Structures are given as structure tokens and as C-alpha cells.
Amino acid sequence: MQRTDHVLRSQSLGSQKTLTSLHFGTNGARPKVYIQASLHAEELPGMLAAHHLRRMLEQAEARGQIQGEIILVPMANPIGLAQRLDNKPMGRFDLNSSENFNRHYPDFCAAVLPQVQDKMGADAEANVRTVRQAVAAYLRDWEPATELASQRKQLVSLAYDADVVLDLHCDCEAVMHLYTEAPCWPTFEPLARLLGAQAVLLAKNSGGLSFDESLSGLWWQLADKLGIALPQACCSTTVELRGEADVSHAYAKADASAILTYLQHLGVVGGTAPPLPELACAATPLAGAQCVKSPVPGVLVFAAKPGDRLALGELVAEVIDPVNGTVHALRAEVPGVLYARTTERYATPGDDLANIAGSVPFRTGNLLGA
Image 1 (tube, rainbow, N blue to C red):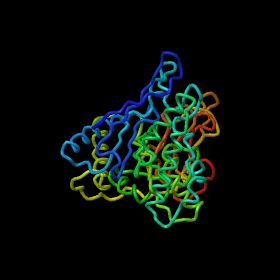
Image 2 (image 1 turned 90 degrees about the horizontal axis):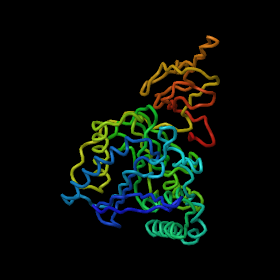
Image 3 (image 1 turned 180 degrees about the vertical axis):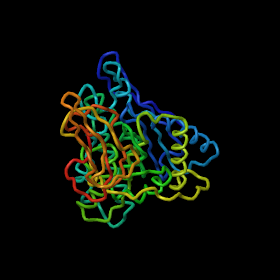
């Protein structure tokens, strides 16, 4: 294993932050897999899973089993990890700019389309090399103006030419679930099986230029715009490792073991991979997921917990106004599994309180939360 420390641009005199990447296998070997944890810095299950995965990869490397290249970033957001306000961690939004740490990544398709559109031919592998070279040139020319921009540049510079990208997150209170773009789903179905995902949400360009879609969206968007059979050369997914409080060695070791087995199925780690378990759920469109909201403020009392499969109209929660004595019922507007809910127990109008994975798309526009 090789450790590399990447110094970020300083935002203030006397202050410097460092992003660390751990490299296994051979630089430039294929397949290349990039894994990062806790881009939303208060989401710690991924960081602990990365800790255990590191040990497993070190052992595999000692046995000569790393057959490609693996980059592991066990703590992807040193800026957010250092942020606290009123003694509470603030790792989702940059306090300097108010920007979500998992939004505003480059639109690589728009950036490289003018450079590659006249260079595409019948050789698919040559086309992939051409696109990756154009992205590399774009990244070399990118001069980040802020600490946050330098962090974004460093992360995508490590990941842009990966065949597979795993971005490890978690929700507030949740069961295991995955987000990925529809063209990437065949690549990640084995991972969903191994992790026991209880929901898989599919989209194409869900909005906001998240880290994962910035990388995978490049390929299907170029193929659509150029009208050519360009391979989906990067498949990326956001893996939601349950809820924020689900930080335990038992969970982390199991998740790391599942990821290692997935790497064996990809052929980046040697050894005989065990058979895949049954898929615990069907993939459903992100546009079909209900974001449960309340039109009124009040004390939030849930009737349904993560993992519950709800029928249409079934009670999700009640919002209670103890001053007026009113009770407002929130119900499932789509049938499906409730895969995540908030940790807050006071609701205000417009808050995202819970998510239900419905099978019929009905939402449009930006499909991601704040």
C-alpha cells in the first residue's frame, strides 16, 4: 500500500488541510476501483467500514491478490470534518459558502464535448482513452479558487478514470440502500445483493451534479449527444450504509467484507468469490420515491420505521400541535419500502421527513434533497 497526502488550498493564514488516499495494486492497472467515505463528514459508518476494508486490502495485497488498482480515501472531507457549530458537527454543508459538499462537481460532458466530438471513431477502447485524456487535460487546467474547490478537484482527479466508483454515505435513520444511474445498475446489482440493500434508487441525472453522477454521467451523456456506442466506462454509486448512529464494528466489518467480495467479482482482487445471495429488493426509479413532508409544524411521531413495507394510504407519522390539540396524519402516497427517515422529532413545513421507494415515476426536476 502507498499512502499519499494531498495538501488542499488554504482558506486562511495559518490553516492547512490534507486529504489522504491509500493506493493498492499497480498504478494504471485495470480494473481500477475508487472508494471514498464520508463526503458528508458527519456520516461516519463509511469511515469505519473503510478502516476495516483497508486491513482486508492490506492482507490481500500481501498475498499478491490485487490484480488491478484500488484507491481508498477513508476520509473524503477534511473541511467538513473540522466544522462544528454550537457543539454540533456540520459536515454536510460548507460553512463558508453554504454549498453541499456533494454537489457542484464538474459537468464533464459539457467540459470535454468540444474537444472529443471530432475524434470519436469505431474503436470503443480508443474512444474511452480519448475521453479520459480530455478529462485529464481539463483537470490539469482547473485552478481552484477556494479550499472547497481544491478538495473537489482532488477527489475527482483520483476518481475520474476509475472503472467503478463507490461513494460511501449514510442517511439519518435508514436501511441499507443504493443510488445509481440507470446505465450503471447491471454493474452494481452484485453489490446490492452482497450488501443486502433494501432499496435501490435509479435515475439519469438526478440533479445537483453530485460526485458520483459527475463521473458516471459523462459517459451516457456523451453517447447520447454524439449518437455513438460509447461504453459506460465509469459506473458510480452512492452507497447508503444505514443511519448515522449505525456505527459499529459488526456492521463495518460485514460491509467491508461485502465490498471485498464485490471487488473479487469485479476481478480487481483475486480469490474465489462466494456465490451471490438473492437480491433483497427490486430497483425502483428515484422519480418514484415519495419524500414525505408535513404542511404543518409540530411534534413528529413516526408510526413506520425504516424497512417497513407500506401500502398506499398507510400511516407514516403524525404531526401533533400540543397547543391547539390537533393531530395531522402523514400517509404513504406510494406503496413501497420506507428506506429512510429523519432523526428530528419536530417538523416544520417543507422538511423532508421520510422517503418511500415507489415503483412508478411521478417526480421531475431535481430529485435530490438539500
